[in-house]
Image 1 (cartoon, rainbow, N blue to C red):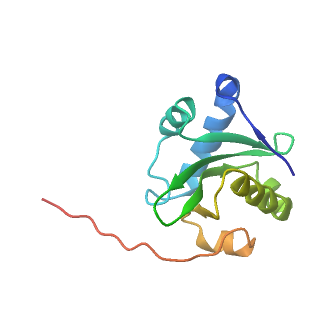
Image 2 (cartoon, helix red, strand yellow; image 1 turned 120 degrees about the horizontal axis):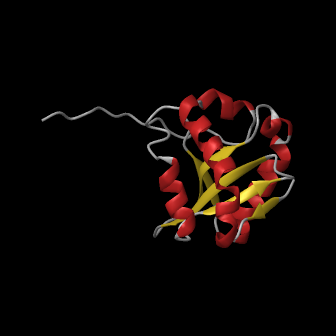
Length: 139
C-alpha cells in the first residue's frame, strides 16, 4: 500500500473529495476527537503545516502533521478516511506505510485521537494509551 504525497499546488484538485471524507469523519465522531472544521485542515494543508497523502489508488486519504517537542517527535494523524471497508481490508499495509512515513520524517511515534476507541484497537493500527477527562467551566 502506498501513501502518495499531494503537492500543495494539487490540493485544490482533490479538495471536494477530501472535504466530503472529513465531513463524514466529523459526523461519526464527537467534538473532543474532532474539534476541527474541514476548513481548518484546508488552511493547514495550504500553509504547509499539514500534509495530505492519498492511500493506494484513491482508496482513501490521510492528513498528518509532524509535532515536535523537547521529548518526542510524533506523526499526528489528523484525519484518515476511506470508503466503508476499504481501510479495514488494507489495515496491515496501511499501518506499515504510516510507520514508513513516520520514520522518513524523523518521527518515532504515530498518534491519533478518535472517539471510536474500540474500532482502532480491533485493527491493531493504534493502541489506546490514555483517556481524556474534561468538563466545561461555566462563567
